[in-house]
Image 1 (cartoon, helix red, strand yellow):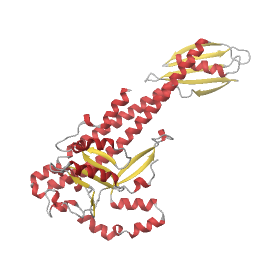
Image 2: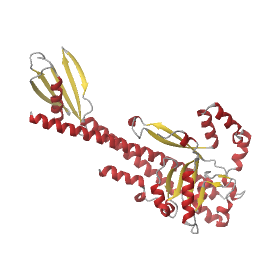
Image 3: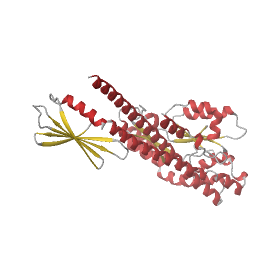
Image 4: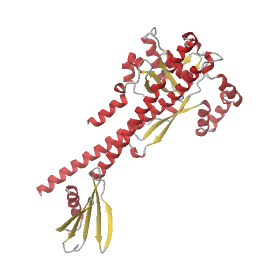
Length: 119
Length: 275
């Protein structure tokens, strides 16, 4: 169903996050700049919503990105966009940050468990 | 015993002109055994032994033994309600184990996330911020996507599970050489990034740690180590997530089979009652 060509060239990990999260992941080696194209966006209090939306849409349209990591509290700003996303690649993972720790209540995977046992 | 009787009723339909049987039941260690003697003239003396084994999940597995002309042949009854229940229990256990692994992995990641903030505190924000990012950075941490077959889900939409593997630039080049045609291989070799000497000098200068000064405090080195671990953990979570989704699909598939079986049994029961 998914032709190999759609994922074979997807090698990059993109990040949309606050400065500390992005710095950390860049230290881990995920950052890539190619001319005008970056695979990350630092979001702070001055970042307009449109910029976050643009970055998300751009990353999902690129053919060389395998994973998009996004701080969960930032994903909240573009919740509709993230929830409507239905492509197989790149895959999206919402990650916690120091100020917004992992909350199992908000984990969509764990919500599926309820659905499974609920039926 | 209800299942055994129902199963036998089905069996009786298939045996050549069987009109009656006598039954003798015994139990031994959770094995409920019923021996049926066929009394009809043609098959007289043929013995059918039905063993119903009740498992600890309170499911039944039916074994069937035919005595035909003195020879005993054992058959395991085809996929019954019993087998499906046992399988479903097993899948649920595997599923819960995956969920548990997922939560454990999140816990590990969470403990590392304050690392850069801590380093910033010791170094000062002017020494650790986005203005120091190298505008020519090249990713050293990359991902390979592969697909593996899930043997339990063949010929279904969930036949393949996606697998993500963290790798380096060399890892990507290696995998390309393995998979591709000669023309692509030529292109890969011509690619200057695969030049061995360039690779070696790159690995030192491409360490993002260097963006923040020649001498970096141990707290920043710690941060890098923590985030490398966290990154690996995030890849694990993505892979676990895919396994979980497939496990759910497997469970739902069996659940449908079970419901179908129960529906068929209901129909048979009502029709045999009518007769």
